[in-house]
Length: 421
Ligand SMILES: CC(=O)N[C@H]1[C@@H](OP(=O)(O)OP(=O)(O)OC[C@H]2O[C@@H](n3ccc(=O)[nH]c3=O)[C@H](O)[C@@H]2O)O[C@H](CO)[C@@H](O)[C@@H]1O
Ligand SMILES: C=C(OP(=O)(O)O)C(=O)O
Image (cartoon, rainbow, N blue to C red; front, side):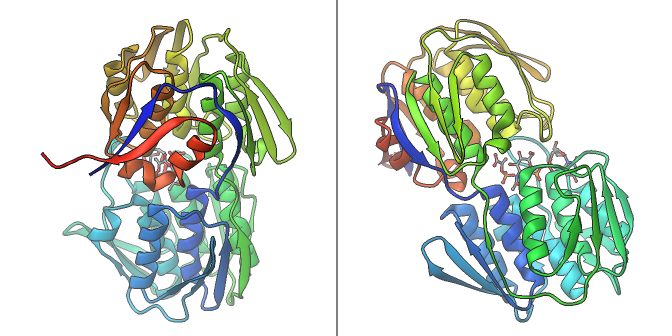
């Protein structure tokens, strides 16, 4: 079994290039199932999750070819199966995103129920509410969700919560439906806009992505396209926090600064210097840091996927900070691991109160999800003695070449095998 070992490091210095966004490429790959022509996707990050969704696409009849490093061509000339099995869906919840495209293209889909994970129960009721409104019949049984529709028709769908996955799945189901679909209280995340741009290049008609009302007009034919995935704002944010926590000076390249507004604002509030320059941002950490309060919210609020990394930073800041998680009901699994490293954190309902400034100590810890894993790496960079992180398969789901990117900035980090007991 592999683990990542991090040791106290000098202030990080240098440049790091951000990869294509995991949360943008996964729905885009799912959407390529809609198209009987080729979809060429550039800046695809070589992540475990991309491998899983590629397997799902192939199991449904699509061909997935690597044209050059980072460029995939997906051709779904024919869909030969409409079932996504448990083995693939349990590896990655985002596999459920093939339901919308399958329903649109074949009028039926049978997908294993995704189930919960370390950050929450993660129901799919809003996805199903949308499919039903478009005319699908839904049956749940034997661990599968089955959807069938003779014909999908446009509808007005109000989402009780601006769910990212539900917005994406419903958008993809609606693009070939008859008439107009309006999604109200839609998620506004940049990954939704990227998916809409991809769909529009394919010949779909999606308007309003990036706002809370998305309008989709059904079309009949689609075409070949090429699309470049947006940069990963969460990977970027992770390296920005790395610069701040180590009091370093790091230039983060290939980003869209507008996608990072809440992260930039909170870093500045903590007294880090943040200099924006086109598609790069430079973060200079400061010795005198200030505590900050954070509340996660749907975009454009502070992203839940940056919550644990920020908590690692707050552990290093003298004074009391508070983190409130409102998006997922159970996203504090990293707290106990940070406490094993000496952090003083108290959970009170949906909030964590951090008494920062107490020196951290390296320890054996476990990554419960990918961002929790990233937070433990960040904490390890300033802790005394080695931090050994287990369950790093979570980290590999969402970070490209993480040790190499950190090592290039001067961090003391490496991957090792843990001998079986
Ligand atoms: C692959 C991907 O893009 N993952 C991201 C996506 O996950 P995902 O799309 O799963 O997140 P959602 O926005 O759907 O979930 C947000 C909240 O809505 C709830 N909910 C969701 C759907 C539903 O049908 N019913 C329901 O109650 C969830 O349990 C959760 O509490 O957005 C999250 C929120 O920004 C991010 O943390 C994830 O990194
Ligand atoms: C929670 C995340 O991803 P997923 O929805 O794929 O579990 C994440 O990227 O932090």
